[in-house]
Image (tube, rainbow over all chains, first blue to last red; front, side, top):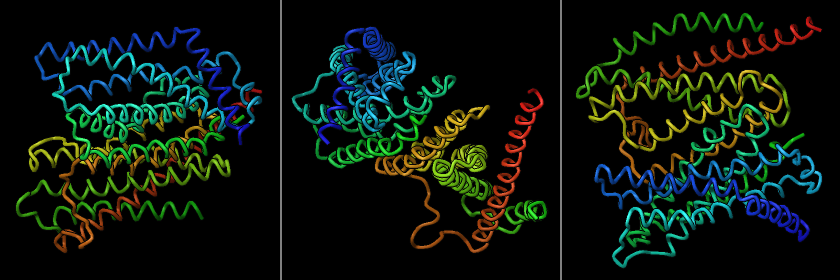
Length: 227
Length: 223
């Protein structure tokens, strides 16, 4: 078992090093996210909409859209470099590859949010009157990124296998994310108004959702990366 | 034998489809408060039922395909998804027709409406993943997606329900809230649509098989 996690860590380490060394993919994702955040808050200002109410919605729509860019390359680069087979041979277990890629995508999403959340906070000018629940807000970010990374990794593994299906990635991914979207938006909204009691059930539901979509791909991944 | 069975099904449907229309519009009484608009209910519920049934068939045949790898099973899954999309589209179109006069809105984010819409998106994505020229890998990956998408359906439903609900609940634990004649009309509708689904599924699977055969014969002739 320690060997199993060591392999997971090695593949994860390789991906993260690659991600931060080449930087172009991460940079593109960050810029795209910043742009989305800017366009959204700008568009709301134009019609003088109460943008503070829209903060959770704008935040998560931006994260969901940007995650397409962030996650899209995790398997595509292996495929393009022809290193997928080597990776399969080296690890000998497709579950390891899934876990490592999932952790890599999760890390990238967290880094992305560290940049985009303060930016959006500034643009929209959120002012919370002392009741801001930061622990709940961080929990919603973590649970949201977890689910996003798990589903995204799984579907990226599917779409890179068919050359003409790469464009299908968002179409396959977004319907699966609907329960997650409802949960994280409600949780981060509750965090803004400091109403933790009303969303405790949602936190457990999100956790269950994340666990489910981490375990189901682990089982099915043998069929995804076959041959 | 198979030929006979499908032609029997065809003639049963030739009788049942007009009969179903007759029962819906003449036999079943007009609803007191909603009036004639309520008639759309018999189509709406029956198509929604077929949509769900078709999705269960996709799920079961996806698992079966991953297990046994019979091409025939994948054809069943694909055909079922295509027919399901058409029926779910009917549900999504007939719903607003009824909702506008009754709820005074075309659309609302009720769990059933939300789930049906997400279901429709997943069906379309599934069909797109299968693609036109189904290779072995496309079939396998679509089967994986068919399984995950099915797991997602109850999740969408319960998360949306937790959030809000205004859809009328006709069938509940206390029984069916319908007049006896309406109940008969609903069951006839459900039965007719189910037979129609079975017949369409049979036709579509046959077509897909013939397409594959043509492709094979072409490849052989070209060699």
